[in-house]
Length: 373
Image (cartoon, rainbow, N blue to C red; front, side, top):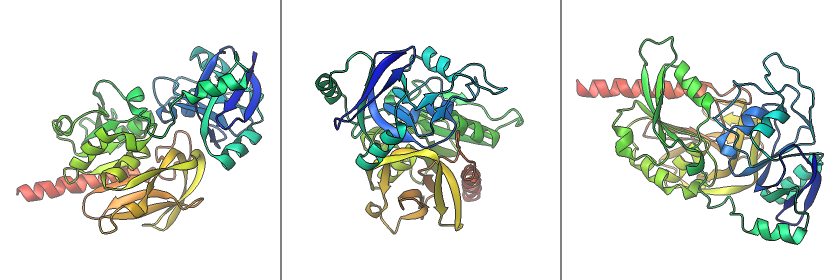
């Protein structure tokens, strides 16, 4: 272990120690309020470009395994905790979290007063930060951090998306898939693919740069817009594709996909002060008048007032700060949610939304057959 500093762009510093991997790393510093699910958080592509601070004080007590991953790599720029657990206990575990971080060459920091750090970020907002075990000169760190791009205006999707189209088959229980879904990969989580596959979908996963012609070529029953990192306003190539697909097939968007849909509908997005990152956010479904606890991971939000009231309907609202959590088009079979119904980690309260997407595709297919007759 080596002494380390976490230097924030507003000049605030926090001290601790790194694990076996030392050096320097920089990114936007955000806090996550989940008490567990650290392996899913580490491998969530939506955290690309960010240093994640865990608010729960003891992290790593159940180790890691080969199954609880949400992508093929760790995406966080850095990981900050109060204390790493040296002894793990879980029948599914194959190694410790410390070994996992070291094997993936992630600069992780412990011994930090994460309560004070979280309070600072909550009061002053998420901001750029740098972890260093080599340079403790504040002026030098300030200059290095100034050269790091802000999350606003940054396109991180091209860093995490698939480079080639691939097919995720339907669950083996189905001899033939019921639905063919085109998924635009902006940093898709694996649990989204698992859930759609269990519902009888064959998912054709496209890079976010795919054109409408490429998507249309597979004759999809529906279009899915995935989660992902960075500023949605920077993704003009995805926004244009989505806008041109309205009325062609049902569309379902999650998190970044929800923001992209809002922009494609003519709205605006804005950056939240410190974002929503955790597994315990209450959201009210305005259609069914029900409240669910949701998993969240986003730093931007759709401005509902920027959308046309005669075209778009608000269907979900965050009960903590009243921000937009869900949209539905009034004419087309299109809807989206800001939270993560696939969980991983988090509660499963909102997984019914995937079945709603299935119902939309089924109704659309029936309508198409009727029109042909």
